[in-house]
Length: 415
Ligand SMILES: [Zn+2]
Image (cartoon, rainbow, N blue to C red; front, side, top):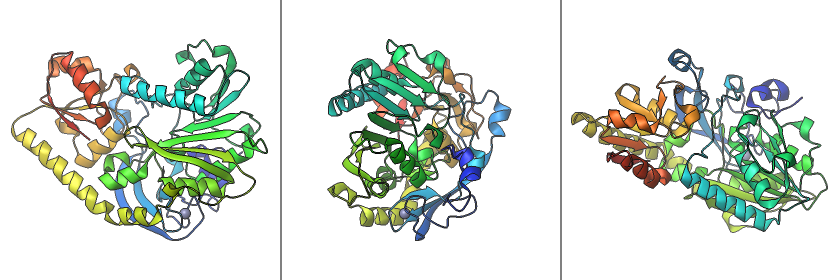
């Protein structure tokens, strides 16, 4: 049984279909093209960054892998050509939710309202969410619209769902795969999941097969936008868990090749996320939207990315060295994947007084790779850092407010 579990995919699909196997890319996972140019390399990074580890030893000993980003000159897809699905360990210990942040909840509010209005979701309809995580998006969608919901994710935790729509919802704690192709829905969404999947072409084709001839179905995908990462040299947004990276053009090309008509392509969340809305078509479709025409622009961003990253690393290292020289204490706010990537790129583990997260499920757990313990914001009351590195600038106001509420006014360095 083929499942879109990166761990299962190597064995199930076999190397001939999994186009970016463990050794080296031979062909593009999105279009099958062979014009792959490797443009960025990071060695020996933790294979997971959102998995909660219960001891420092376990965190330090966590499996590592290499990243080599390959750019497909044919379709613009970017993938880690060294990705080894055998290193993946998705489970209920995977802690990806951002729903403890008011800023993130405001964003979710907007997405819920917009999706429900655009696709007229309501009673008698069903929504399917592939990769629903802890289920918060699906729960909100069902509560607000009155529709029924099916969520599929191995990291789902039933004890965290308390919902008035509970009776209309079904959760399947598993990886989505062909055995779920019978699931029928009027609306299919997949948020922050595609970037974890190696064989993206097979995955999007399976979504298309699941829909079959039910042509009224609307499809919504949300994932990180790689164009911004390339433009900003945001190396902390490249990590092992994400084996797959898209821009608007490459994402639209993949969907069109799998017999979807891409209706809308846009960015959200301060330009960090890429959103795609599509409907099933009878056959492959041609590019229609101006935003899809980005191959030449992305190709030149790729060409200067390594230099861009070098500049970002140097300026961050210089800023931190200035604080170190003054004996300042440094903390990081945000313990997710960006943090794991930054700590390893700048080798920060020995000089941090704390890694803070507002998600209580992360407190007392340890970061893969560095073995740093994640603590509650309250721990900063006694540690009193002079500098706090904010892992995502979109949370700066919220973090400044949370610090001030604890009578702390450190300098913030926001990425
Ligand atoms: Zn390609």
